[in-house]
Image (cartoon, rainbow, N blue to C red):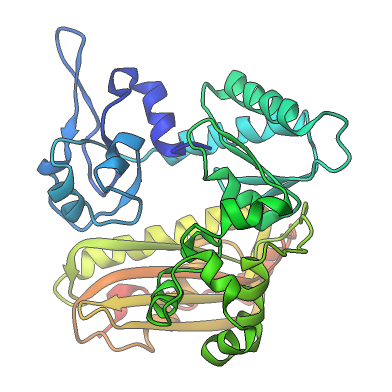
Length: 379
C-alpha cells in the first residue's frame, strides 16, 4: 500500500491532499473543528517530546521526513508539516478491506503485515500487467486507496519492484532485468539488509547491489558469517527460492512504550504502574484476539543511557489474561536494577499455543492468588 497510514488519514481529511503530513507521536492533538466548518491541524514545529514518525506523505518524504525519525528532528526539516495522531483501529480496518479485495481475485496470499502482502500468481490465467491493473482497481474500489505492485519470479525481486514506481505503480521484472534495473540500486534496497549491515558494506567499499553481486562470496562470509554471506550473494544475484507461507502462527506478541521524558522507578511510580498495567492488558487482549496463550512472559527496559535489559519467566501453564500477565511480568521486574531513570518499557509474550477454553481457569487455579508483584511493590 502507498504511504498507507497517511493515505488512510487523507481519506478522513481530504483538505490535506498534496500537503506534507506526518503521522505519529504521543499526545498529539486531534484536528479541531472551527465554527466556519474548517479544521485546525497541529503543525510539526509545535511538537515537543520523544515521539517518532509513524509514517509521512510523499511531500513530507521529499523534505527528508521518514518513518522511525524522531519528531523533534523531523520538525527541523519540515516545521510547517501537518501533524496527526495515529489511528490504528482505522488502519486495521482498511488493511482488512484491501486484503479481502485481493483475495477475491488471487487467494494464494502471504500476509506480511498491515500494509503488505505477497501473492502467488503462477496459476492465474491473466497476463501480468492486466492482472496487476485489475488488482489495483479492486483495492481502490474497496478502500479508496492506491497500492504499488511488483511482479517477478520471486519474493525478493517483487519486494524491490514494488518500491520502484510508487505511488500506484506496476513494475514487472524478469531475470534479464537484474543487471540494468537491480544492480544499480543501493545494497540496502535488498529486504533484510538493515542500517548496520549497510554501514559494514559501505566500509568494505560495497555500495550497490551490483557491487555486492561482484564481491566474492568468500569475502562476504569472512565479514558476515557463513549463512549471511551466502544469503547476501544469492539475493544480489536475484536468487530467492522461498515459498509463500499462506498460514503462519505468531511467535510472540509484544507492546512497548517510549516515554515523553525519562521516568524514575520511585519518583514516577504511579505513572509507571499505570503504563505497566496498560501494556500487560493490551498484550492480553492481543493474545485473545489472535486465539493464542503464552507460557513465557518477558519485560524490556531501556534506561536513560540507552542500555537495554530484558528478563523473562516461563510459567507452568499458558495464560492470556492481562492480570496474570502483569503478575508474571512483575516477577521479571523484580530481577532488574531500578536505580536509574527509564526511557522505555515493554512487555512480551512468547511460547504461544492455541487458546483453550480452560486456559484462564487453569492459570488461576490453586486457591487464592498471591499478591501481585505490581510496580507499586518495587523497592
